[in-house]
Length: 492
Ligand code: ADP
Image 1 (tube, rainbow, N blue to C red):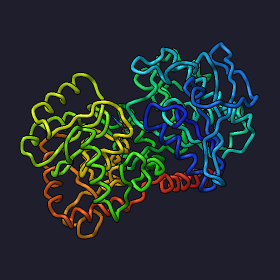
Image 2: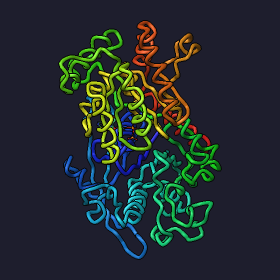
Image 3: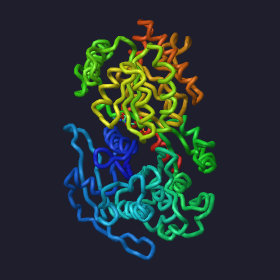
Image 4: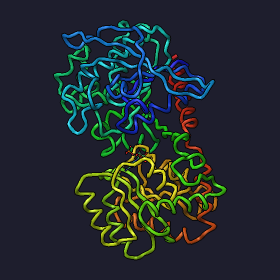
C-alpha cells in the first residue's frame, strides 16, 4: 500500500496541536505495518530551525490566481530504530509563505492563510504527480489540505499520475474550518460552479474543511463518538448537514499515544519507573517527588485528584473551579491543577487555591515533565470536557494507573468505561463517567470515585485494568490500514 500523507504540521518538526502528534506518529506506525509512506508538509522556518533539510532538486511553479509561485521540495528524516521501516519526509518550501515565526499566525491568523494553504495543497498535487509513484491512498488532514480531495476528483487529467489514488480526509477538530471570503475561490483554480452549498461554499464563504468532507472518498475523525456527534448540532459547528450526507463514508478512529514518551516503565521524568506489578510503589515515589516540587514536607495521605490541560472552556475548567469551591473544604482529597489559560481563569483558580492552602496546588505554566510527574502521582484525573474529539490526557492517565473521571463526550466515551456494578463484574470498568455538563454531575462522579478509592481491592483492579490496555499507535494504525483497504476495494 503506497500512502501519501499530507498534513500542515507534524511532531517533532512543527506543532500547534494534536494534529501534529497524529502526523508525527501515525506514518511511522503505518510503515511498520508494511505501508510505503511519503509525508508532505510545509517547510516552515521552525522546521529548518530543528533540522538541516536536504534539497531534493525538485522545484516547480504553482499557479495561484494570476500568479505563479515557486515551490522547492526538501527532504528530512526522523531518527529510527535500526531496521525499522521509515516514512519518507518531504517539505514544500516557499520562503514568502512559510518562512515566518508561527505556523498560522497564532491568535491573529495571517491574512494570507487562504493563499498559503491553497498553494500548499496544489503544490502537493504537483509534487505527487512528479514523483510518478502509483499512490493508492492520499490521506489529508484538516482544512489546510481540504482542497486536495477536490483537486484529485475534479482535475484528473491535470495530475494523471495520481488519478487512480483514493482520498481519505481526517478531521481533528470541527471548530477550525478554513473559512475565507468567496473572493479566494479563483485562487484555487477550480471553476466557480463548485462554489455552492453542496460543495465548497458554506454560509457565503469558501470553506476548505467542507471541501475535504464533500470530495474525499472516505472521511474520518478521531473517535467513533465524535464521528456521530459532528453529524448534528452543535457538534458539527454548522457543517452537520454536509457531514450527515457523508454519513456512510464517515468513521472514527481513536488516536494512539506515543508509548516511547508516555510509558511509566521507561519514563525518565519519574523518580522511579513502574509497571502494573509495582504501581503502588512507583506512584508513591512520584507523589513524594511532586510534594517536593510543591514545597510540602511529605506527600499528602488523601487521594490526589489532578487536572492537566488547557484552562479553556472546552476543557470544562469552569466545572473544575466550581468543584474546588464545593469539595476542597471537605478535606476528602488533595487537588493539583497543571495548566495555562487566560488571566481571568488563572486568577479565579488562584483565588480558590488561596482559600484552601495545602489542599489545592496550582501549577500554572506549560511543563511537559511536570505533566508526566502529575499523571504518575495522581490517583484520579479530571477530564470534564464540553467536547473532546479524542483527548489524550485520559489515555495517559490509564497508562499511568490514574483513574480518569470524564464527561461522556467524543473520544472520552470511546476510551473510558464507567465503573458500575455490571462493568465491575465483567472487568471492563476503567474510570468514572458523567453525562451532564454541570458541576453537580462532576461532583457526583468524583464522589463515586472517592468512595471506590476507599475500597483497596476494587481500586487496584481498576488501576491494573487501565494499565493493561493497549492505546499504542500500532492498534490505531491497523484500523487506518483496514480503512485504506476498504476504500480501495470500494473503488475497484
Ligand atoms: P488538546 O489537544 O485539545 O489540548 P489533548 O488531551 O488531546 O487536548 O492533548 C493535550 C496535550 O497537552 C496532552 O499531551 C497534555 O499532557 C498536554 N498539556 C496540556 N496542558 C499542559 C501543561 N500546562 N503542561 C504540560 N502539558 C500540557
